[in-house]
Structure formats: structure tokens, C-alpha cells
Image (cartoon, rainbow, N blue to C red; front, side, top):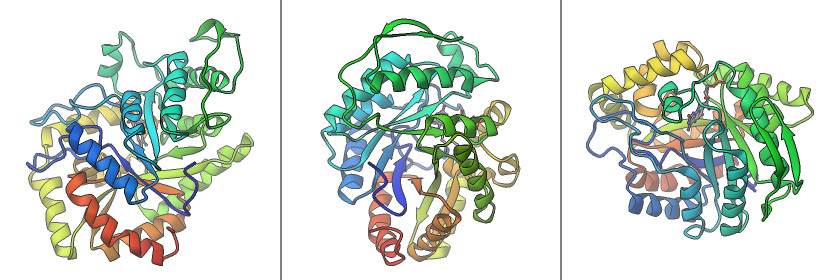
Length: 357
Ligand SMILES: Cc1cc2nc3c(=O)[nH]c(=O)nc-3n(C[C@H](O)[C@H](O)[C@H](O)COP(=O)(O)O)c2cc1C
């Protein structure tokens, strides 16, 4: 599956308007289907390893209502299965909103349609208005449901059944599913979180945690903590992260554009709403991230900025790899306009550095 490169690279968030950015610049990503399809084919042909969507049900307000438009991720992965050939197609699934019996069948379907390239990114939900859309209330123990969800999901794909399940959240009778996934015992599983509870959830369920960091120098401690939690339950746990990219021929040009998207023309109302909601209900970032790095929320949902020349960006990615991350998902203000510059400028430098074949 995706562990074929020393350092994995994929695209994050291209299924939603704005991608990871919350900016008003007119060239911002609109996630129109023809553009998304062209992007998936471009990334696949260039050898990127995975395509990872975000799961969103409501916009963030402000002038752009960023993320109001987003494609549902299971159906999107199925649609991209026959349009791509190599990369892993993740679906990002909210455990509280999608029944595990449904998810197991959907993931198995994507796995067959793609020739064994399905992946699952489990999220347990932080956005209270989204819970309200589903007639639910967010609890402060979101992973309790997640554990049960994963057990049902993984047992179906492992070929168990019919089985009964008696949990606090699911009471199920005669559970079974076919076809099973082509990947055995199940497709690759990621889970996205930062908090200690989220790390423990990943350790018990996932192949890789997908998490954030503020400074590269501090990331090694996060990674050591995550890996220790995996080892404590006897499972090796990989660690992936997410970065947003502005790659230009000169450092000045890249920084000037970054200032424009993230400060002068940021969608300030939406950024404030997003940061306030996220801070209230999620531990998904170190608290300093909100105060020190509001720009990062405008340009990339709080992920790490890769802003500069191809040489600068490649050097930063090598440092991220050296810190212990197994890979990163990346985003752009306009994926289709900017990915070619990354492919031509940065990928060869990563090969020279020995972190990509
Ligand atoms: C890199 C990353 C990506 C995430 N992607 C999504 C997403 O697409 N949809 C979503 O609702 N939550 C997403 N989350 C939020 C997490 O799933 C989780 O709800 C949040 O981090 C709060 O949990 P925590 O306090 O355990 O970190 C993401 C989190 C991280 C760190």
C-alpha cells in the first residue's frame, strides 16, 4: 500500500472549497468536479502516494463561507477509482455520522473498484453544528464511540460474521459483509487527531496517525509520544502530518503572496469563527498555534507552512522527514495551478535528498 516511499506525499483537502485555506483571493480553490478530476490524474501521474479529502458538512461563515461546498468522501473515492491508477484513495469518515456496517461495505467497494487502493481516515468529530445537523450532540468522549465503530468495521472486513455486537453505542445482530476488501485484513487506516485520547485511539485502531505540529524542532517529542502509545499496545504506529505550500521562484515572491492570502486578503470572519470553534471543542492543535500563528489558519487550517523556493521547501521537507514523520499531506491555494511547480521544482530535490525514489 502506501509505504513504498521513504517519505510519503499526498494531497489534502482538495474536495472542499478553499482547500485548507480560508482566503478571499479570486484564484482560491473552488473544488469544481472537472478541476478535482484533473488534479487527481495529475497527482497520480506524478507519483504522489495518496489523495486525502477532508470531511466537512458546514461552512465557516465569513465572506466566502469556506468549506460550504465539499464533496462527500466515500463517493468521491469511488468516482476517482477508475480515473487513477496508483495512488491510495482515502475516504475521511466521521464515525458518529456514518454507520460502520455501511462504511465497511463502501470501503470494500472502493477497494474493488480501485484494484486495492482504498484507505480510511477516521475522524470522530469536533464541530458541534455538524453534530446538530445529524440530530446529535457532541460529547467530550468522542473516541468511546470511535473504538466501537472501528471494531465493527474491522471485524466485518476481516471476514468475521455473522456476529452480534453489544456495545454502549452499537447493539447489532447478525453482522456480516461481502465482498471483503482486496487488501487484507483491511485497507490502510489513518486517524486524524492531536490530543492524548486521539493518540491512544490511533494506537489501537490505525496504521498511521495524521497530526499537526507547530515547529519542526518540537515535532520529535510529539512523534516519540505517539510511537510510545503504539508500542504500549503492541502496534507500530506511523505518524503523518499536513503542510500548506506556497512555492515560487524567489523567497520574496512566495512570502509576498503568503502575506496576501493569509493576512491582507484572508477571510477574517471565517478564520475567527473557525479558530474559535476549533479551540472550544478540539485539542487538535497545540494551544500556542492559535495565538502565534493565525496566518497558518487562514492559509492552511493550522497546518505547517512551506513557503518559499523549491530549495527551501525541499529542505524543510527533509527536516520534517528527519524529525520522524513518515509523510505529509499538502495543500495549495489553487491546487491545479500550483501542483505542477511543486512536481517540477520540489520532487526532484526530494529524490536527490534520498527521501523519495
Ligand atoms: C491533520 C488533521 C486533519 C483533520 N481532518 C479532519 C476532517 O477532515 N474533518 C473533521 O471533522 N475533523 C478533522 N480533524 C479533526 C480530528 O479528527 C479531531 O476531531 C480533532 O483533532 C479533535 O480531536 P483531538 O482533540 O483528539 O485532537 C483533523 C485533525 C487533524 C489533526
